[in-house]
Length: 142
Image (cartoon, rainbow, N blue to C red; front, side, top):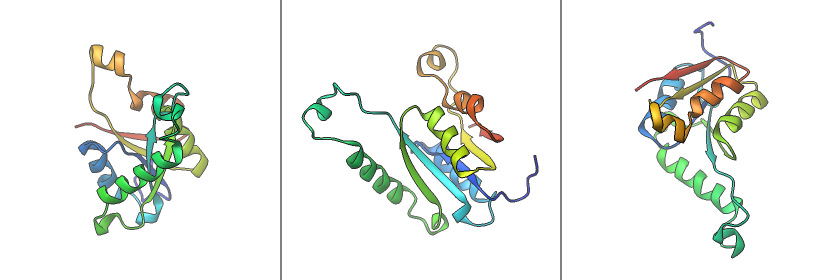
């Protein structure tokens, strides 16, 4: 894999310090911020959730809130031009599918370093992305 600047890099964001740092690292891997795509994945709404039943919450409002939070978190000038995407579903699958859909050259993602029972119970998004992705992945450790 060449370390020359990439045309399209995807970085999953979950608002953790590690994911924000990963966006900063990925900025150095692209020619311009427009080639950097940050994706935030929300869990799918279940039909039996009270907010869905009472029609007080829907995916459109959740997407609006997520985009507003992304804009606030990444308001620094160095992030101007970064493409932000909000998706719904399983993070590992959605990240991989998004990267394939936009023709990403690389996925840069942090790992929270969970092991043992925590990893078994919570799963590893990085591991699922590694399994499903069509392109190379750079996993950043703490």
